[in-house]
Image (cartoon, rainbow over all chains, first blue to last red; front, side, top):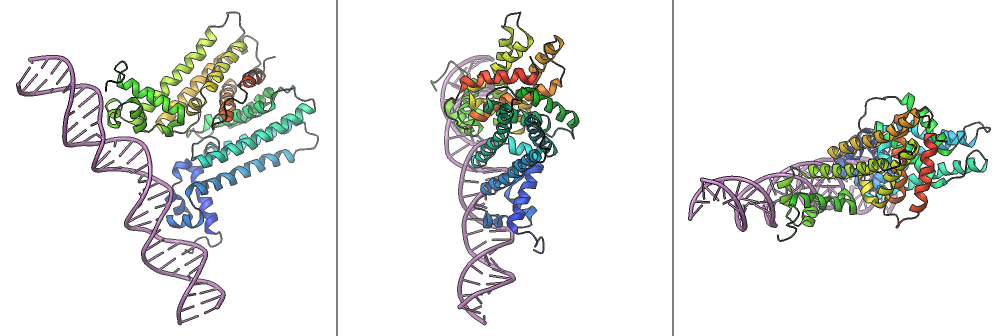
Length: 198
Length: 198
DNA sequence: TTGCCATGTGAATCCCAATTCACTAGGCTT
DNA sequence: AAGCCTAGTGAATTGGGATTCACATGGCAA
């Protein structure tokens, strides 16, 4: 066990699970595989988590938190003069860009089936994504940049649409990157139109 | 076995599987449950299908075919004077309306995880949905009703967006129908804007 | 030194659903 | 009637992965 004395076992298990999920989805992340990659025996996992499910929930949370932070950070780092629409587009484009960079992980977070408890987490984060989007929409409407609309539905459709538009082409082991170059600008156009921006 | 002598066992198995999936997803559709509901023993399933997977693929196909037909029929039954945009909206609204009526089934068709072979079918039908949508888009563009755009991406985003916008609010045992009344019109607005219709 | 606790081990066990198979049972043909 | 085929049965088997548990090991406090 002269392995990673630097990183505590619990962390290594979480990281191993994250990597395995990213590479091959939940199916590839068996207890034996996770423990193996972390450099410990299967039983050790249960010294740190009461079940595999609990570990998954924690992985899910940490990854989603990172995504939410990245989106919020992207919006926050824009010049103060930016329009609300530009901010919204940036948030969604950030979501899309990061998903494209890690398609398997994105698929796992957005749609891949899992145990109910993990699924509940998914729901919660879907909410947060939508909420981020909805806030931007409301600001845009208040500022007169956007027309009145059903904010919740538009937000959900945008988040879902971006997700599926990306996951669809890229999820099933699709080749390298058919055209990530074209995808992002086209998606931006889509978003601008969908929200009713001039 | 004086049961449904009217319907052959094979059909009854398919129907039982469809119903179970609609009620509780793939997880609820075990071989024993399917056979039980069809009024036969588990082993009998294998007299008619080489595996559970094969049965699922067939269920999946028949349900999706019905959906595609319904969407095409809705468009075909419109007055000849209808605009291409109206046809597109009708196709997607039909999709949405039917999905809302059977949320669990829609979830199973759109996103619920399954065996790879069934997943392959999903991909194929997603293509067909997108293709239906893309055709309508192209017609609208050719007729000058819509601006130029990345047709494939817009189509995918619309199909995905409609799917997720519906599945999101309604998939996880959400209460009766929070507001299906508001959903459809809002979705129509979303679609019209997203494609760039005036 | 002794005892205790946290951590780790990994083979054995448990679980659960798919699948098999030896065995009816009814009908049709010769 | 005898042979054969299709459809059905359901207990037993399989298979794969999660979970348990009896057994180390090493540090640290009394």
